[in-house]
Structures are given as C-alpha cells and as structure tokens.
Length: 334
View 1 (cartoon, rainbow, N blue to C red):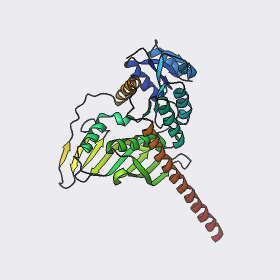
View 2: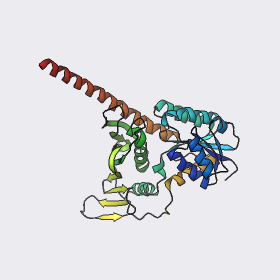
View 3: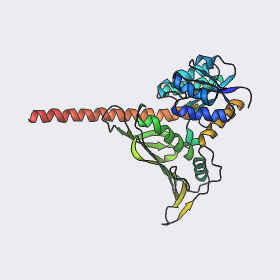
View 4: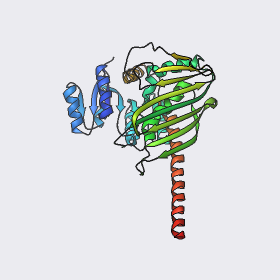
C-alpha cells in the first residue's frame, strides 16, 4: 500500500464496519462524521486516525486518494459528486442514488475523469455467490430460466425510503452478476405498508432479464425470522444459496431425479465479504482498473428500482381511488 490513504465519510452503524476493515488493511487516513459521539468512538479505537466534522477536509487532503461514502442515500449524489470533482476515487454504499439520472451523471463524471467509482453491492464479493456464478458459467445448471431472491428480516426503525431501496439493490445486483445478464425491464411491482403509511415495508418485484430468464425479488422489514435465500433454476438443475445457515450454504438439486442433492464445497477461507470488497477498492484505486460493482452497475440497478417504484406508487394511487370510490358509494347507499 502506498502512503496515500482512504477516508470514510459517515461512521454510523455500518460505517464503523467499513472503518474497521480499512484500518485493519492499514489504509485508513481520515474519518468524517457530524456526530460527536460517533467521532469519539473512532478516536478511542483508532487514536492515530484523523477525524473531522467537515467533509471539505477530505477534499483538501492530498494524502487521501479514495473516499468511502456511507451517509444516508439521499445525500449520496451531493457527496459523491463533490469527491469526484476533487479528483478522489469513490466507493459509495448502495444505492448509488435513488434517482437514475443522478446515477448516470455520477458514472459519466467518473469516466470523464478516469476515476474509480464503486458501489457497495456487497454480495458480488461473497465467496458463495462467486461459486454459484462459476457453476452457472460452467453450465452445471443448464440454461438459466428463473431466479428468485428472498431477503426477509425485521427492521424496527424503517428509516429508509422503503424496504426496496434498502435491500433490493443487493438482490438486483446479485442476480445480474450470477446470471451474467443485465435486467431489461420490470414486469411487475407491488409494495405495501404494514403500518399503513407512506413507507413500504414489503415489496415484490418481477424482472425480465437479458436472454429471457425471469427474476422475482421479495424484500421485507417485518419478518421476525430472518430468511435470506437465492434460488437459481436452469434446464438441468436448481441451485439454492442460503446465507442464514452456517454450513452447506450452496446446494444443487437435480430437476428430474427426486432426492438428488449435492452440497457444493466452498474452497475458500472464512473471509468477511466486506474485507474483500474493501481490498478490491484499494486495488482499483492503485491500479485504475474498473471495479466489479462499478458506476454502470450502480446505474442499472437504480434504473430498475426507479421503474419498479413508479409502478408501485401508480398502483397505490389506483387502489386509493378505488377505496375512495367504494366509500362514497357506501355513504350514498346509507
């Protein structure tokens, strides 16, 4: 590692994990956050690391070659743009933005300046996901016809725009990566709120992939028992990746012979996927190579989710109109 270091902008719950990994990789140069308590924790754990409340200190530091943006998603565009304009490589947590045009603008800006723009699509660095991708490429499953990703968990805070923007970037990017195909268009999208407010905490999305495969994605903030599973079905066999079990995470089932099950041995050390992602960013900054989860990848994911949200919100308006019509009719009948 050269003397040039990485700065982390935002050190909340997830930001602390990123701070820890870059520190352990001997790459952490500065941490910025508006919260005094968050900065105090950083100073206590990593006394030699510079801390600041002003992100301009990162921009003005010649010792910082790359910046990790771990702030709320609605602030991503502002911070990423500022860092790219200052000539810094950027790794931004997902989603790159919640507006497709903003994502495209950031991608184009990074390209025009020859800078690395990497999005935190963490599962692209998961060893089991990469092993599944290899099986698909080797034709073990046959031609892929269907993929289903379920990411169900409990979230008591619900402080994002919706569960879709919080979790679905993982699902869309992972399915696209494993299949080696980009999503073409949204074919169905449903979202609802169990609290009956504007924040959707359950969403279901159907996507047509290049090559004709269909992908279904379900995300939930209201499931007390965690369920994280990816199913990929080919013309020969079906693979299931279950990330909630300690072993036998990846299993293959023959489509035509009942009881034919193969547990895929994962030949890898138990390395935290986030560490691999952080190492990848450092490598990209030093070599200038394009990140696995680059700006183009981020733009494609946001485009699909933006399209899905428009369908969801349109259906919600229709449903409200139907409800209002039914209420008015019932009043007239009385």
